[in-house]
Image 1 (cartoon, rainbow, N blue to C red):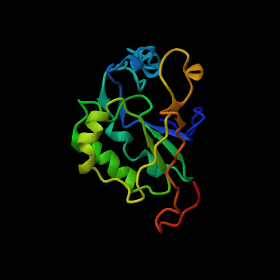
Image 2 (cartoon, one colour):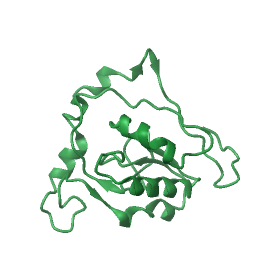
Image 3 (cartoon, helix red, strand yellow):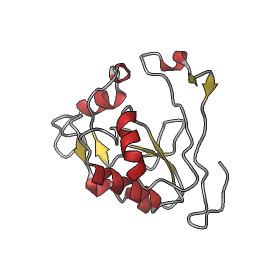
Image 4 (tube, rainbow, N blue to C red):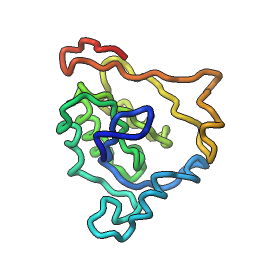
Length: 170
């Protein structure tokens, strides 16, 4: 978890869940798994248990500690919609996001079916949900490009002033 990120399309990462299991061919070269497994068995390290799935409740309030507004990649080291993450925990993550309107949150999932099932029961923002297509998977991601259905999807949530709903721009 970091309030700074080298990822070009986000400012910070927030991982209230760690670890995952592979569900698609796009998971074959998972950077998060490679990173996490390097630290398996290292006592006290956040990835002491490697890439085994686990909830990280002590990380839930991290975004509230950040003074400046951030574009936050949620679960850069896992998938919030993993089948073993309880719906109540997912709801808690959404409640934390709703309580921090100064931040803009991005969620990446390969489990769109579970997302679709849970979506009606989650506290989504009232402005709608923009779509940003990060990339095609594989070993040569940049070469594969970012086009989906003939379009590059670059939508981002509109940042507000932290409560009044006034737009600060996209």
